[in-house]
Each structure stands twice: as structure tokens, then as C-alpha cells.
Length: 127
Image 1 (tube, rainbow, N blue to C red):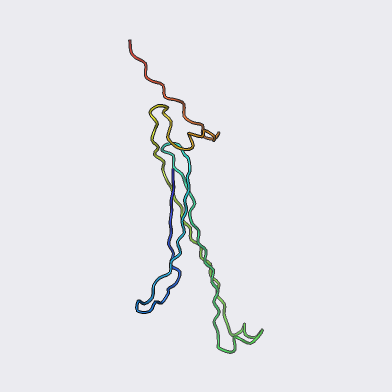
Image 2 (cartoon, rainbow, N blue to C red):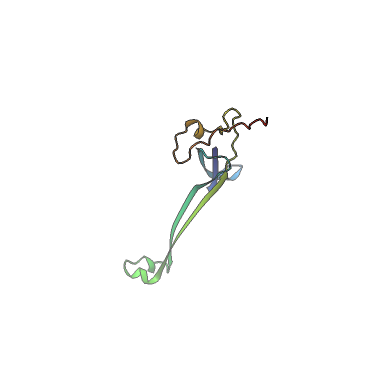
């Protein structure tokens, strides 16, 4: 299963003459190839964004006095963390010859935790 995910974030503005303000964006992309059994659900963690900001306010000039300035000012810290999660269900296509799914996982057969399914047995003819 191939997975592609893309997130665009706004990162300020740029002023262009005769046009105005144009947004700046940051594009983040994720590409992955995973192997799962047919109809299994895969839970993936996605992008995480953390913001940290500090602000200081107070009485002008008095808040700038060393040591005593703390009596005339206040400080505010904030942290923000956002994340995305994704759940996908696999729907594989079976190879008519072997009854196995056409995924790199079954072709390699290298994962002992999920062995390939047994081959399909043709039905018996009633005689």
C-alpha cells in the first residue's frame, strides 16, 4: 500500500508591488510504502507541529530596570502542539494463480509475524 500525505501551513505574508500581500506557505509531504494483509487496518502517526511563544508586558521604562523591573512586568509562556493521525484499510487484489495478494510483503515473504496465507485448494468434483 502506497501512502501519500501533504500539509500546507501559512507562514506569514510577502508584499509585492502592484499586487499586495501574498501568503507564504510551507509544504510538508510524507511518502511511505507498507505491506499489510487484505482488509487489515493500519494506524499511522502523521505530522506534528509544535509552537512555543513568550511575551512580556508591563509599565514602560520601569519594567526595564534590572531586578526591580520584575515588580512592574508580567511574562506569559504558551505551548501548542498539534498532530494528525491516519487510519487506512487495505483492500488487496488477489493473484488468480497463487491466491496471494499482490503486495511487496507477500512477494518477499520476509515477515515472520505475518506469514503468507496458505494456497487455495480447488474444490473437489462430486463423482
